[in-house]
Structure formats: structure tokens, C-alpha cells
Amino acid sequence: MAERRRVVVDVLLWLVALFLAWVFVRQGIAKFSDQSGWAQAFRIWHFPVWFRVGVGVAEVLAALLLLTRGTASGGAIIIIAIMIGAMGTHIRWHRPGQVTSEVLPLALAIIIAFGRYKHFLLRRTPAPPP
Image (cartoon, rainbow, N blue to C red):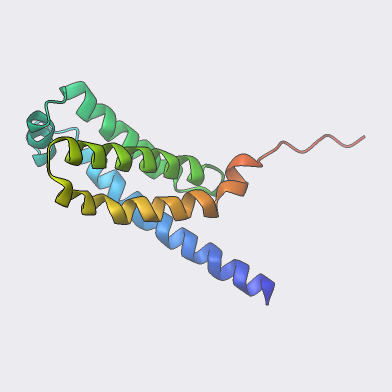
């Protein structure tokens, strides 16, 4: 029974991670284009181009990190930081109603961060045999 529960949890964590990876690789790549809606939004928010591209790189990196158990928690932590920054941007520009678009990715990233933390924090190289 415990083994079955572990398998179900693992499958659910993979589904959440794959969904987040799909979303963030697409959104990250979109931030590389000067013609995207993201380019316009970052200009409205008075962020420099390098910052928009940096956020895009961080999103793509986070998406790739989500694809292995050992790095998924790290990718989720990057997403958490980006989502908190995005929420702060909406609040700063007096658009708190737009904060809701970050709630789902933030919640899912928190689930992955906690669900995969053992693989991230407790990865150790096995000691050589005596």
C-alpha cells in the first residue's frame, strides 16, 4: 500500500512538473522576441531589455531543471522567485487583480519544490566501499 501511494505521488509530481516545464519553456522563449507581447509589457513596466531576456533565460532554465528528479526542486525554486517578482510587479503598477495569473504556477512550483526536495537536498555521492 505504501509503495502504491509512493508511485501515485511520483506520477502526480511528474505530471505537474511536465505541465510547468511546458508552460515555462514556451513563455521563456517568447520573452526573447522584441515583437512579443512580453516585450511590450516589460517596456510598460520600465524594465530594460536585458532583464526581460534574463527572465526568459531563467524560465527556460527552470523548465529544463524540472525534467529530472534531482534538479526539479531547484527549477521549482526559480519559478517561485519569478512568480513572486511578477506579483510584486503587478502590485507596484497598481494592478493587483493581475496577481491571480501567478497563483497557479506558484502553487504548482511549491508542490514540486516540496515533493522533490529530498532528491535535491539529500543527493550525495555514495561513499566508496571500505
